[in-house]
Amino acid sequence: MKPTLLVLAAGMGSRYGGLKQMDGLGPSGETIIDYSIHDAVEAGFGKVIYIVRNYFLEQFQQTVKEKYSNVNCLDGEPLKFEFVTQELDKIPARFSLNPERQKPWGTAHAVLMAKDAIKEPFVVINGDDFYGRESFHIAGDWCREHEHSKGVFAIVGFEIDNTLSESGGVSRGICHYDEAGHLTNVVEHHNVQVEADGVLRGDNSVSGEHVELNAKDLCSMNMWCFTPDYMELSAKIFEEFLEENIGELKKEFYIPFAVDHMIHSGTAACDVLATPAHWFGVTFKEDRPGVVAKFAELVREGVYPSPLYK
Image (tube, rainbow, N blue to C red):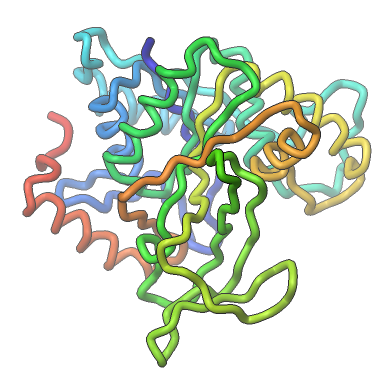
């Protein structure tokens, strides 16, 4: 069984100032998505599904045709690609969209757009985040082990100190889990950084307190492993979400919200998978030089070839 990689690429990155998913950051102009696909192929994935917006669908399709036409899976079969669009009006027919709303419906809504395209376990990632090859192997192995499972999903957790920014404080959702390794909740912390005294701290969004954090605790970087039954469960939760929020202009339906609902309703459990990989990404334009330097270093160390695709 070859898992599918679902790439969330519908965001324009307004803070970044452009379509960052298409920004060449590697030594030969590779994008972060290029490295994710390379790592996924090495981990045994067989298909990539892009979640995009209609207005840049053609650009993504052309890029895939030009760049990945010679990329094969581990079994020698060509890597498959599909494209699915996320738009505001893609909601159940019984709901009427607020004409003033412009904000997307969120990451869990984006995943639902691929409901008809997925029949196998799949891994969800952000298109503008680098997760590291170890993470894809961990996620791919979990998917193969759960090919016939239902009601159990997984989150790939990164050690907090492997996700910090040199540019300042960041927001991180810290994973809490029970003795069986099942996620109980994710608590958002803001302004997470190593402070002047060398101690890692952040602002707990629940208590409002500025607290000391364990650098080795696991946090969510939006890398999830799902079996196909996730779609039906999430679709029901989305309808409940819309019943309460259809008139709202900014509220979004996020993956952690959907998973938390499943956990606390008893309809699903979520494994927490620890990865030793270092995460990095581009949130602001100021992050770009550091990311370019990291990819150059990975190439010098022989982790990746350059160019990545020929």
